Image (cartoon, rainbow, N blue to C red; front, side, top):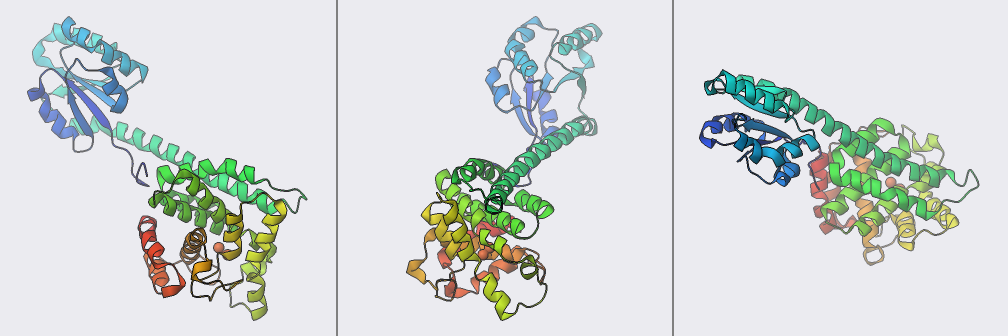
Length: 369
Ligand SMILES: [Fe+2]
Ligand SMILES: [Fe+2]
């Protein structure tokens, strides 16, 4: 994973100085809330390009020598429109200070820090930058996660609606949507995915999208290749597609199901399998997941009462994500369970589930908690 689910990236400050001893107290104030890098005036501008989110100049800009040394840095600042600040030291004299400020403007400097440094003033100056950073992080996170969730939703809706529109659903359409799903989970993790799905989608859609989130997050924790992450995303997204043939009042029934209703629900793997087979072009392993995600290793599952050696690894992954998701979701007949409680229930299922795989799933549970 590139970034923790809800972490806002820190401000990285390039603190450019000719007098490190004088600048160090400023560095220590800023390091309470930022990542600070003390640098000399003559640096490779790539250093600025690579990491800086803000530049502070603690240099005498009235010196042409300093200006010359800073030329590449100035271009890097202007090219990236980086916020930049100047340290003002009245002890250099009024004229030099006025010249320094004039030249600082050519760096885009609009803000000043006074020397000797005052912690309150420094932190106050930087507060809006932290806010702006947090906002832009949050909005880019929301965009990526929403894009991923809607890609998944679109693919699922097209699969379900196709028979009603008397059209078929090409597997390629599903494949085209998968990179957005993987990106959303890889960059932001399972937390924002869960939040978005819970806010926007109901019933089987919500369940299928959550299972997709848990299954892909699991694959990413296991460091599976992107190709395998895709297979898992496809299988998870479609595993319950057969539920679209079950009456909603049975799916959403708040009370106990009758034997007949239960029997109808138990048909959904077969319905899903038949639907995708009719569409054609779906890989056998996906059909296997759709048909067998309710099989259990001890032979007590349905529809084919398969046992350990007959249940593929991919199916086992989907089964774990499916059961976990069902337990942490609100259902008409019960409230959602906290992730760790759900995990403990699954541990108590003993030899029905693949124990090694379940242990490997724990980090996803911890991220979801
Ligand atoms: Fe199911
Ligand atoms: Fe399911």
